[in-house]
Length: 162
Picture (cartoon, one colour):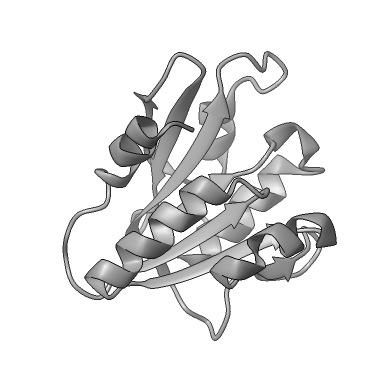
């Protein structure tokens, strides 16, 4: 992502106190650096996680922790998050529905799920339908570049069937 794209993405986050951000990354350090700096400036909590050892080494400078798709929950200390950023290769996820359901459990009511989607990946279709099936609402595409868009989805109280 370019610096302009990162700025556009970060503009989604309101400047309100005591926000919690959760970020799943596959090793792209520039967005991690920008998110960590924003959280430091605004005194937000920033939890960065990655899948696999190979990404952990490149993200260790940002305090990344390793998780696996198989673990029951992704959050630490039962924390709920205002924003969850998913910036991984979605094609590498073994079960997207399970990933979105697990993320749903860690997002606070009114919180946002923000997924970076490559426009050139034809194999990732119908994400909006999958998100609806996982009880997300207000699903929108935010065009940020010629190659990527952000898919935004919200968790709202009373909409889930859990």
